[in-house]
Length: 334
Image (cartoon, rainbow, N blue to C red; front, top):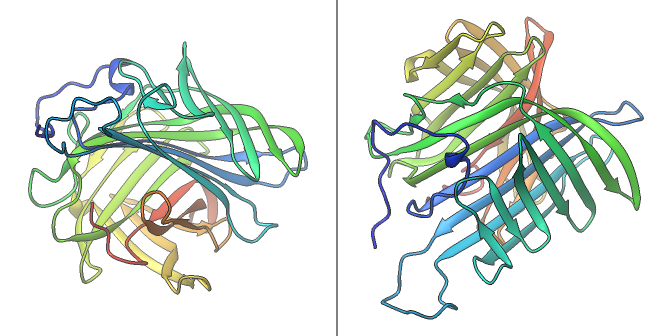
């Protein structure tokens, strides 16, 4: 068995392509957002499900032979706590205990799940220190990245993914923490990406941000870094408040670190504050809190920074979103 390549000309279909694509090696569904709580104190949250196809080990017909691995992460960013609360799950697909359905979004590991129900998405995440019961309602059509959903990730065309986002999701539900349930609401972002060759061989990690603007616009921007920490490739998509969409080339994107935070646990040094240029748009990203480091060595085998950020333009808040920083602890091998 060979995994399928990402090739030009494929037209993404909805809701069909919101489900799993097991012919590709790697896939993830990634939901992030900001919560408004009854006490008015902002929180960030993250839910991610990964699906990884395994290389076949001979012609083993056994149902116990693993062919797909499912991994899930969940995190809560709370400035009062000073660091992330997070949890993770990993299981092989099968026997109804874990899986990723095709044709519609339905992914689960035991009681953890992210599922499409009619025109909404529901997340049920009973983590060890908190529980999410959230509903997400789209307010905009899917935002396709790159060229009609084909997103290049490096100088070589084979380093690419199929990639779309659902920004400006209206979110509401129940957050349970400290044995107390509270009603929450907010704005979220859903990414779905699948590929068989995501990273160029020269890449060591990436920096990514997804921002929901207060005026209804949205920005996704990323850069892939080489082994020396320099930009290897970059891209982005801007949807303006009036719905106009601009896909950006590497020359349109610039990430400039403004401030670093060093983890006292791992020693990794993360650029947690950034100046971002995306075309003519200039933004500063500032974290909700510095310590949003995720230790996922028990599932994906790495440590990275992923957290809630504010977006500012000329020192004026204009949006909220999430920032992901990988490859700062150790180079990634994807």
